[in-house]
Length: 176
Image (cartoon, rainbow, N blue to C red):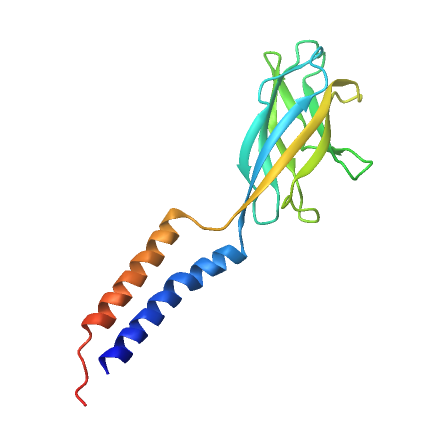
């Protein structure tokens, strides 16, 4: 009877640990290592050339974009991004305001229709409202799928499995 009890404790502990971890492995977290490579920086100078960010549940990754645009005569510039397989550029938001000669804003890679779950290349350009280009180049996103969850979730799984094993071990034995 004692052997059955140990087997039950082992099986329950294994299920409580491997079950949730297998679930997290089935639904990985996608991390994107984003590199922005301008072709030329004569009219504008890029400040942030790389970012490491997490893609959300829809496969969208957001990154900070900052560039010095000293020759701009406008108050707003637009970041336009084109996936490698598409002929069309997509404008990012409502534009980036220029303050002190610096344009800053948040760019987006991926969408619900085209989630960022694998390595991708994009073409970008920084333009004013008339379409005049200040900068262009490539954006390379290297995507890493990571199985896991938050530290708190992993800690709770381990704690629950330990408590379960202790309870099953000290549970009073039934007399035959």
